[in-house]
Amino acid sequence: MDGAGGIQVMELKRKLDGRTMRYACEPVEMGPAFAMLLYRHPVALSLAGVAIPAGSRSYGLYWTDRPYNVYHWVAAEGETLACYCNAATETRIAPASVEWLDLEADVLITPDGRGRVLDLEEVPDELSPPHRAALAGALRALADGPAVLAEARTLTARATGPRA
Image 1 (tube, one colour):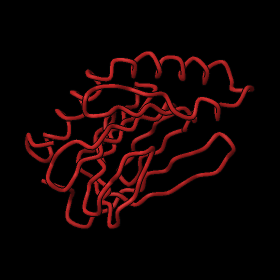
Image 2 (cartoon, helix red, strand yellow):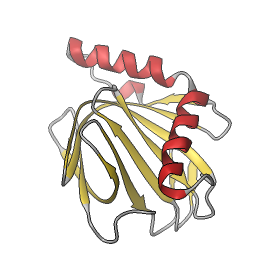
Image 3 (cartoon, helix red, strand yellow):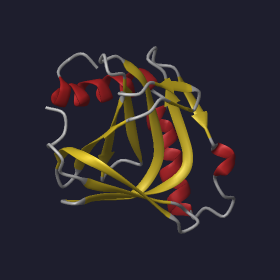
Image 4 (spheres, one colour):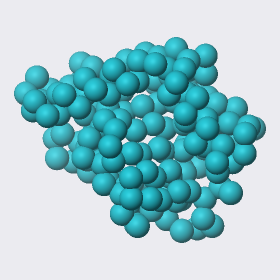
């Protein structure tokens, strides 16, 4: 099953500077501690150097007890394009929304399991100690690219079948 037929859940990405970005997504799996949302890419684009063709899907994976979230980018044909991971904290899952605080640093994991840290220079020097600890925990957890990739593929397969 790919989404819930027109039902939307709002992803609320809060930035450290106070801005909130909103993205309308389809709920795939919603629970108190884990959510999976689907965003369908209507046009081709490039993100972090990865070509994302029109018709590709982005599965957002969110946990309330982890210092990161994962976007599993999947081509229309089903193959993994990459996993884009955000260092994140203060994740809250509600029936109509998933909200999280972006800690600015990201990790891109390619289909071969190699990871690359992005945007570390965007992390403010005045980041609070709890947020700095969450960022460090995210970077440690995301250092095992093959494990992150395998988990994203397994979770996405629950919604799409084993192709992704």
